[in-house]
Amino acid sequence: MMTVYLSHGLESGPKALKIQALKGIAEKLDDCEPVVMDYRGMAEPSRRLEHLLATIAKRNDKPEECVLAGSSLGGWLSAAASAHHSVLGCFLLAPALGLPEYPQTSPTIAARLTHIIHGWQDDVVLPGPVIEHAQRQHLSLRMVDDDHRLHASLDTILSDFERFLAQCQALNQQAIQAGDS
Picture: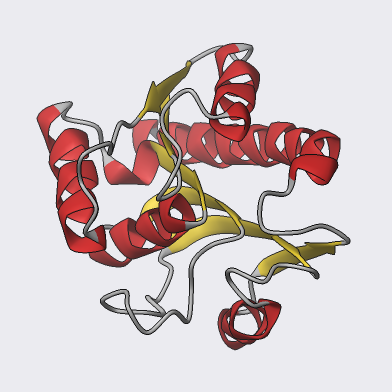
């Protein structure tokens, strides 16, 4: 079973458009359980990170069978959580990387697969630090002609996410079969 943790941004919530759309994609897959995180009332990034890590531990999910997906601060949370426990996948939308007000501003992403989607016109999280991070770690990066919210790119995001989850499932299945032999 693959678990997909979905993390919303700083000023949104679990019912946000992108989070719910990603949840819908994950729900279509066999052996895939989406978990929508709720960080409302937790302004500090470090507190949200503790909550995400505690939720994974409480549910007894194996990090190597988890996909962490998030937007903005939720993208940073996913990246930062992977730095604590290597995960199957990280799918990051306009991730808040390179922002000095966040602890560990550019965490080393430890995921078997990572895909980032970022907008060229993002004026909240500038593209430069995200591009540099992707280049430094050799991560898959799709730049789109959009702003921080990425609403004009929703169809692209969803098709990339569907393909990304299929790749994660294939890797997870290979790992399970290798463990059985």
